[in-house]
Length: 470
Image (tube, rainbow, N blue to C red; front, side, top):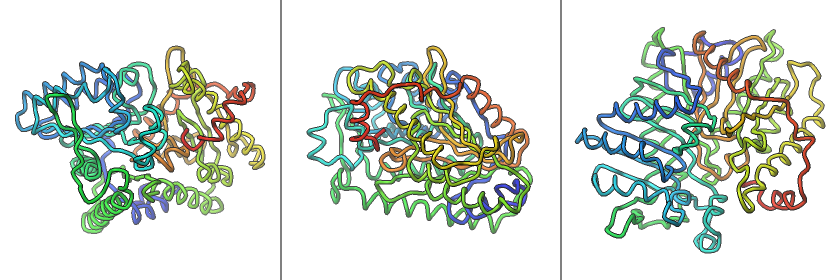
């Protein structure tokens, strides 16, 4: 399986295949989208093509997404055997008030009671006592359901985008669509079903939506052990299946892509993303003396504040790293009232600390080995893209990318529940599409100007208190 891949990643892919489930895909079935409008149009088409199942996972669905809800309603109405499965975050979806996101789903629940299945994941980091003290909106600081999976039947689209009008119009993210992939779609669907086993179920009542907790053996805020067991067993089952498939099936020439799903759920002691990235940097270091290449890494996060583990991997490596973060104006919290309005400034502080650490690490001065930071800013847009691309050299397109829900920060590492994917390819055409994706993001990136910005003392104080929640 690994011989066809670039020498830069060949050993890494081989080792990762022994650690993580894997899916072999033909590059012709991988579609890299670039615009929010493309994401939305593709999402609606995925729903319209559905005949057996629609499975959607997001932080939340916006209250005013009438067209999206109508598309789901039309699909259910015209296909009597179709089932809809939604996995959303409990705190974000049940914010009080007339525009509570969960209220927009109530008509679907009432009209198709036995074919609409809505699960709300509640982070157990927030105890029962604290949940009565911490006000709505701020309770999401203790962790959220963060996986972004949009599929039906045998196709699935992976993104970092949520289901809200901004993500359909002027909030930049990443979007990879995999068509005609029953095994990958089954994996994603089964993952969501597994998480539903320790989530609330939403029921329709005459008075509105009601939440039901099915598992009487465990309380909603004490699911850590169950979640760790379920997710670990789930991954092991699919790993065994992947290894068996690879050893028993002759690899066809059409499969020039391999995809590895990685779960990161720090509060459940599931840290596959951390282990995968650590393995990648170890392999890059071990290949330095044997390959006449200087790999280049591109990294981006709309909420850039690398976890200490990831920062150390970058600073201790000789791999050149080009980073894009959101400018303060492109941060989703820019202009918010109250404490939320300080969040962009908080990320400026984290960026300042990161650049100080880069200087202290005395990275090599060669342009192919340095660490650079840019900021993304486009008038009237916000930035939410995240991921990693690895290229064998500065003038070569990527052979590897990490994509999905992770923001690569402390919050994603330790609090949120994430599903991301590491994808390796030998396809020249797909590599070029990934290169075009990088160029599209860099089009609106300018040199980082955070060093010139002042950070107020109250922002520093807040970051000191809740920095891990950013």
